[in-house]
Image 1 (spheres, helix red, strand yellow):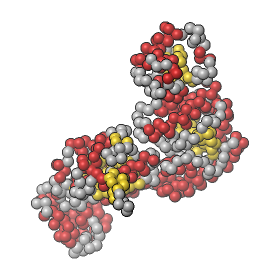
Image 2: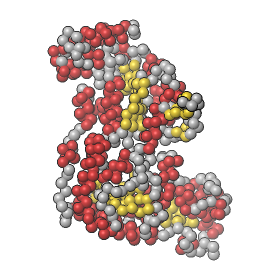
Image 3: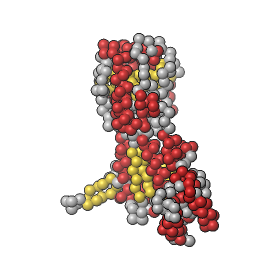
Image 4: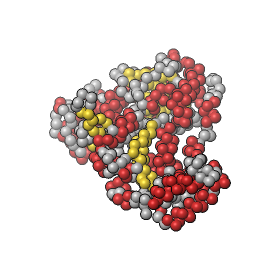
Length: 557
């Protein structure tokens, strides 16, 4: 059975009862040395048996619930410290514990406040105390189970600060846990982030080339059972996991249930850290020549290049990215022809490309419904009905399976649909990404992963922005695209100067027209005049105005 509920106060009271009623008695004298007690609660410099304390706190017999990982998590979740009583193999035990617990936590539990955070910190602390690490004061130990969302492949890295202080670049030693929990690899590895702009195929080629280059430096690891090839298998379908595989220089697998003793683990650790140290210092190693593609790419500024292409300020684009990182949904609003959808697509493609992610676009309209967007029944060829996932469910599933990859859903003309009805119960998830709700048709739990950004575009010429309810306003950042303010202000003039310098006067005409219209949210946008011949050719500048801008403006007053 599961452990009955008890709070921190009840556990602390149970510690006091153990001290006053049981400690020193015949049953508990020397209990720490008994083989069946592998862990203990440590408080005020004293040790306490985990299951007995829980029994005292809950009133349940120790035979009525499981010990081990479940009991340890129960206690640590309530703020108490659990330590191993078998110091000789504490690294082995914590690795086995993580392999047994992490997959279930990742797929069925909330990320925030989860005990797995403490488990990985404890594993890092144990690793940092090993002689192979303490003898190398420049080596730092870091761990990650994700940033805001569960990582499909969590890791614990050892970084020499002369080489790198982040797993994003340089070379380092890292423990990579298989997604399914079937094993953990001790690897000699390299950073992957700097290769992202090369795209999936280019990045894979560059990472494998770099790994092959380093293998000549790590040949003696084969004596310790390490493999120096591309055969590592993290049992994952995530792009980040596959990148880790491509980046691996050398690896050794410890399967769940067969993780070796701490002595073997430390010998392996010493061997790979020795190779790492020689590589960093350059002694007894071939010169480390960067692959040409990475060297040429180093100064490349992808966001700056996008800003130049769009004729927008780089800082502005960066700030929009920061907004989406803070709250993963935003609405670009403004009159027609201001580039809302175009910029949304370009910006989404930029941020998705950094992690080989995906962009999807849907368009709302008055008849668009929850069943179209989220999930609904559709007729089948056999005359029945089948439950079919809509675009939101489809892209959310991909994002959930690839937590380290950026996905973006663009909702064009978001205010043309009944947003509250289309989103349904998922309205709640826009504000609480770590929570789950039950879907109204499948009755399955569902959450919106944080690596799924939602960008809506809203046409304000029909004045419908005023009708957007407070609930929607609270859940989205609103980014203006208005002709008389940045980033749209001056855009037409910049485009004409670059592409049609003899027609810069058109920008003056449009500015004066908008001044006379006197309605910012129904202004004439620059895009009508930024499409090349014939709309902005010599003698054709008025064509776009007569056929698109003026009729559109006439409809609104």
